[in-house]
Image (tube, rainbow, N blue to C red; front, side, top):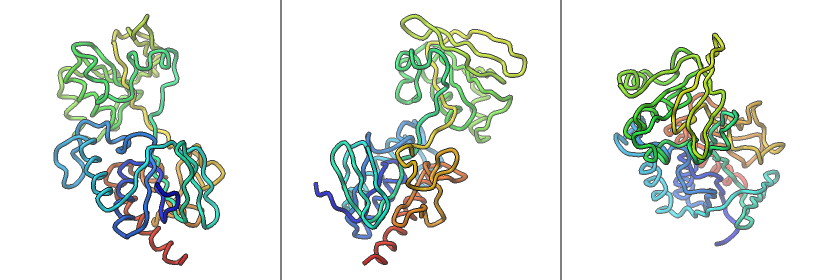
Length: 306
């Protein structure tokens, strides 16, 4: 594979895949770098119902379609981890575990990673009861009690999904009301397998060889109690995958990339798209819109360079 391109995209979620499609259709020599399989966070979602035109199906199916579209128009893909970047100047240099690649335009679409609880036992039982992906691991908990931590769309949707396998699903949320959209809340409240643990946080995860119980604390009265479960699924938010960008492009205090409506960052020729960008709504539909805009803006930027 050649090392010089017109456009390099870092990240293979919906934003990066859409950018690849638009970049390749504009006849730009486009390379997409993803450290894992393409798809991003949405690929681990069992059911997508809020992406226009995609009524039923998994996140994996949706992103497979996106990936195949991008490849059809010529986007190159490599599976590699980005180890260093030099984004100043007309030639951007992307160093990866598979070699070095260069382009005058770069789209940053690295997405986010799940935020951890950072409580005793979380690391110890990772892969032995603690999970960040219900779609990946839910089937391992057939007829067993499990816990979901969080109150947003992801937490509530995955709690509903887990009812397919689990004997009971405890949903622990630090407030007394969910943040998930109303239609998702209604489904959860109507499900007999889901039990809500309000105003509470996880204090400790315990067990012997495998996870056996979780200690939760009520944030209002300080009371502590143990809940017997064999799995804990954590959905308490996300952190942007932007650690390697420190000092290169402008970031928010939370580490999200600051970009304007053209997806332009603080550096010429560097664009941002998707969940790693500072914005109001992080959904597949907004990620795809970001990716399309970023690729179009990159095309215009390259035209001005020539």
